[in-house]
Image (cartoon, rainbow over all chains, first blue to last red; front, side):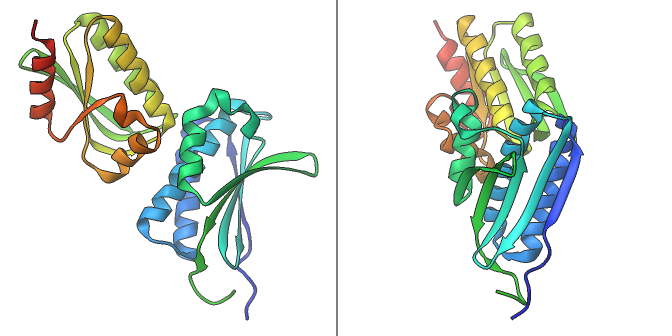
Length: 129
Length: 118
């Protein structure tokens, strides 16, 4: 059994015009590494878009930070310093989409950072797990 | 990809056709165009989403605020959409219950004219 492919991190200016870049890169990465059909990749792309849009609105230090990691049964996307689910009254449409589109969503507080973690269940495309 | 917006008149109804992607970067263009149409005329507005490849919650928010604006004027906003990716966003958010969504511009224009009849 091989090791999983290495995590991929993206950091871009926390501005609206960069959200498209992040959703496209994350979608392409998931499509290449996981056994996901086009519909599920499109779902993930939209969920990532929503989380990044909320993070850009908060823009704590002017950077948008997203990390993609892999588990044997899921593709994981963490969007840092973004929305907390407790604030969802303000972000109802975005959270409705995120919850419907990915398999799990959680707010993770760890090492002084907050992340919105999106989890898309899927098998690895090949080679490990 | 940018968002391209094109406005035409059809049987007394304004038709706003959108092409491209509607997200946090491009939604302000759509908002501005809806506001301009609303200030020029209180005729119903048909927004054609058949050329839209991507629509997110920011875009939905703009459409909902446009709908409120037109209904305040005693008018309406009707949508044209058949693409599954676009309809899915309306279905998840329950907005299929809020908007009148039609398969073609012609049907939306007829529905707008019928709804507008005294």
